[in-house]
Image (cartoon, rainbow, N blue to C red; front, side, top):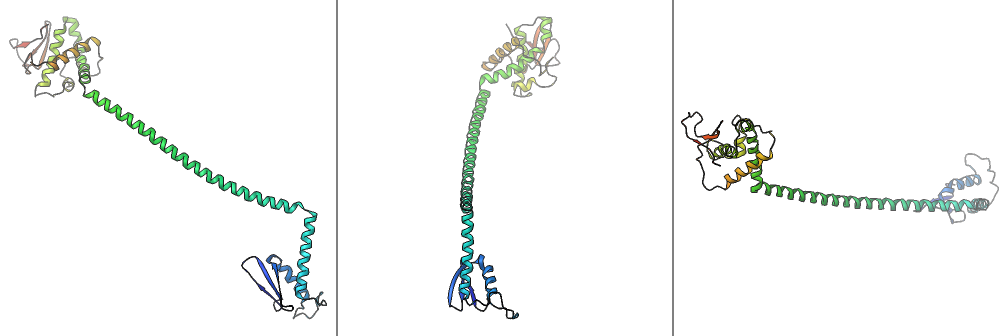
Length: 279
C-alpha cells in the first residue's frame, strides 16, 4: 500500500486517495482509513511472505477495490437506517436539543448576570438614597439641637434643673424654719454672685456642681415642680436684670432660723454685713 497508494491530507477531515495504477484519485474519510488498508493488504502480496493473499488472483485495480469497500460500507449504513430508521432522527434531535439547551443555558446565564448587576445597582442606589436621607435627618436633628441649645429657653431650663436640685438640698431647713420664696431667692443669689465673681467658674452649673459647697446638694436629686418653678423664675430675673441688688462679693450663704442670708466673709462674726432678698 505504501508503494502504490499515496495519501494526501487536506485541511478538513477528508483523505484524498491516489491509485497509481489507474492514475486516479478517490476521496474518502479518515475514519475508514484502517478498513482501506486492510483491503489493500489482502490484495497486495507481502514482499517477505511469498504466500499469495486470498484475494491476490483478482485483477481489479486498487481503486476498484476501494470503491467496492466503500460501497459495502454504504450498504451497511443504508441497511442500518432501513432497519432502525429512527436512529438518525433521534440522533439529530438529540444534537438539536443539546444545541438548543446550550443556547438557552448561555442566554439564561447572561440574563442572570444582567439581572444580578441591575439588582445590585438598584440596591446600592436605594441604600445610598436611604443613607443620604438618614444623614439629612441626622444633620437636621443636630442642627435643631444646636439651635435649641443656643436658645435662651434651653439654657434657662438647664440652669433651672440644677438650681431646683440646689433648693431640694435645703428642704429640711424649709420645713423646720418655714422658709419662703425670699429665702430660696437669696440662696440662689449666692450661686449667681459666684458666677460673676472671678474666683469661681463663670458657668452656673459648674458653680453648683462644685464639691462640698452646698448643703444637701446632690446631682442625682429629683427635680420637684415647685422648686423648678421658683428656680426658673429667679434665673430669668437674674439674666434680665440691668442693675444688681447686691455686689458680687456676697458669695457665702448662711441658713438660720430667721431665714437665709448672704455675707461677704465666710468667717465673719455676728457684726458682719448680711443681705437677704426682700419679698
